[in-house]
Structure formats: structure tokens, C-alpha cells
View (cartoon, rainbow, N blue to C red):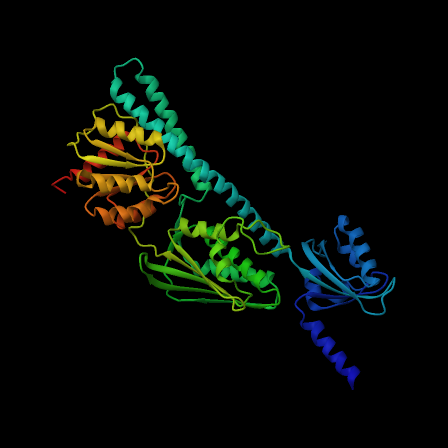
Length: 503
């Protein structure tokens, strides 16, 4: 009874196996092909391929490698080989082949061959590698853009000050205007670099996340190891968000690739979509990706978003997948958190603000260097906090010309010391968001604690206008996007310190 039972089990496995199962004779001819194999060969009946050699279907450059692989397997070698093949209807596929001898190892032994279609998986990996390379380029571009923005701000501000002193009738005025025009073109280049670095929002549109998630899940079910169960749970009344569909796809694919790597023996991968209210963000759509994989300890969880940080020894990649995810989430003004424990899987939670009618992106404008007189101040003291000396020099000149008294600080420690010493007469603080050591946002909290009535104006060339608006909601009085003109600076200070009584 044992032999018929084995035949029954073999037939059941042969028919149900999702990968192609082939029996190859010692001369290379196909003897048996399961239903999955017929799909791979683009055949409707076994008779269409049985009797033909497997090499006939392989791309010519791969035939010799496959012949050598078969010889090694026949002699007892264990391993796999990736080849390109073409079906009966001309469809090209990438196939991962594993083989084992069906009889005593030796030259000419019959083989059992398992062939997995990994075409879409390789395309997915290629997409991820491309996104990772773009992330690396983007990081370099963003760093360059931030530094160049500061220099450009100094140049543009200096040009404006020169223009106000020369007057429109001065012979050198056209040269100053031409230099200003070149500066505005340079500012546009910086904006493009920031877009590459994923610091600006780009062209966004209303998007229903469930449709994108369904597309990703269908792709994953075709490409992931069949031992990984993929599930999608979505609130039927899911809110809409503002984004680019490709951003969400990239986020999901990166997170799911990580989950796949954490479950080499299989497991469960779950994507959930729901509506939540989050403190500090308001109404959000929550995207959760959970797996039952190896999990991470606290130290790894803390570092996973660092560029080039990797835990996948021996695997391909450059350690930017989660950096890309975090960058895209921040680009959408969202938040991402991770919960994980060794042996208990991982869960990534992403909250993206719900799209409401008043959500708009305001692009900064670069006005021509004005030739009119600067607005008049009333002698109030302004503290300028920036680590770039050229920006402090330009801001001082513009504000003093407008009638204000200027104090300078190059870092957080100087700013707080000046505020403690001179706080009684300081009316406003111009504060750079990005500074070495403590950021402007951290300094703002200390400034607010020392002098709650002092007006704080943030400035930055590396955060979005929406992030700037969130700083205002957090208590700042204004936001200037670098490069800003001297007129924009003095006009904003005047509006804040001398508000229009008719408003």
C-alpha cells in the first residue's frame, strides 16, 4: 500500500505546486510538466512541450551555463541557477531553477526541476535599487542645495541693498538687475535640487490609497514566496490624501521588501488602511504594514532610518530603502513609527494628513530686487540667529537700513545668552531652522520659555512651505523661505511688529 500512497501524494503535490515542476530525462528531454509549468511555457497541453529539451526554451546566452549546471547537479551538486527563457508565444521570463537527481547521482541522471518565475520580483528589486540610487543622489543634492541656498540668500540680499543705495537712475542699476535675474534662475535650480532630494512636495493630487494598496498586493502575491501570506484590510469609508500615486507604491514596496527579507521561512504580511485622529496632525489616513518575521531589537529599530544602515549581511542593497520611505512620508507632511521585538515581527505605522479643501501648496515667489525705500522701523531690537556669517551681515544691513537695531548670534548658546541679557528690549528673533548642533526648532522652545512675548520668525531653504506653516501653527509668527530678499525680510518684520489695525 505504501507505493500507491506515494504515487497519490506525488500527484497531488505535482498538480498543486505553484512553481513549475519538470521531470527532465538524462538526454535533457522534458518528460513531465505540471500545470504551473504549462503556464510558464505558455502551453495549453503537456503534449506541446513534452519530448522537447528544456534548453530550447532558454535564451542562447544561458544555454551553456544551464548545461554545465545540469552536469553538476547530476553529479550531486546542490544549488540554483537563474536563467532567461522564452515561452511558446514569445513571452520572455526570468526563472530561478533548482534541480535534484531523481536517481543515483551520475552523468545522464534524470532530474526533478523546480522553476520559479521571478520576473516581476527582479523588476521590483530593480525599481527599489533605482529608488535607492535616487535617494543617495537626492541626499547629496539636498545637502548641496541647503549650503548653496545660504550663499544665494547672501548674494540676493546684498544685490537688493546695493540696488536701494544706487537708485533706478544709476548707470550700474541695469547690471545689478541682471545679476538679480541670474540669482533668481539659480534659485530655481536650487528648487529643482530640493525636489530631487525629496524636500519639496512636487505635483500632488487627491488619491485613494486603497486602490494603490490593492495593486501592490496583487503584485506581491504573484512575486513573493508562496509561503508568505499577504492580506489587505481597508476601512470602506477611507479618507482621501494628497500625494502622487508613485510615492505610496514606493513606500509600500520598500516596507514589504523588508518584511519579505524578515520572513525567509514564510509568514504573514498584512497591510491595513484606516482613518485616525492624531495629536498634532489632525485627521489622518493610517497605513500599517505588519509582518511575523524575525523582528528587531531596540538598537536596530532606532537606527533603521539612517542612510546606509544595514542588517542584511550577504544581501544586495545599499541600506537606503527605509530612508526613502521616511523621506517620502515627511514629504507628505506625515509621520512614521515602528514597533518591533526580536522573534515577534515588526509593524510600521504611517499617518498621512487627510486631504481637505483648504490644503494648498504655496510656492515661494522671488520678486525683482525693489528700488523703493525700505519700510521704516521704530528702533526695536531684532536678534538674528544664523550660523552663516553672510546671512547675518545681509540681515543686519537690511534691518538697520529699515530702522531696527540688530543683535547677532551664530548658534543656540549665543542666542540664549543674548536673550537672557537683552531679552527686555528684543522684539523679534529671526531664527534659522537648520543649524549645527541644536536645530532652530529646539532653540525656539527655549526662547519661548525665556521670553514668551518675543516674536519668532523662522527661515529655511530646505523645508517645505507646508512645514513652515506648521511652525507658525506651533507658535512662530512668520516663515521666510530662502533665498528671501531684504524687502521680504523687512516687510515681514514690519507686519509682525506693527500689525495693521484694520485687519
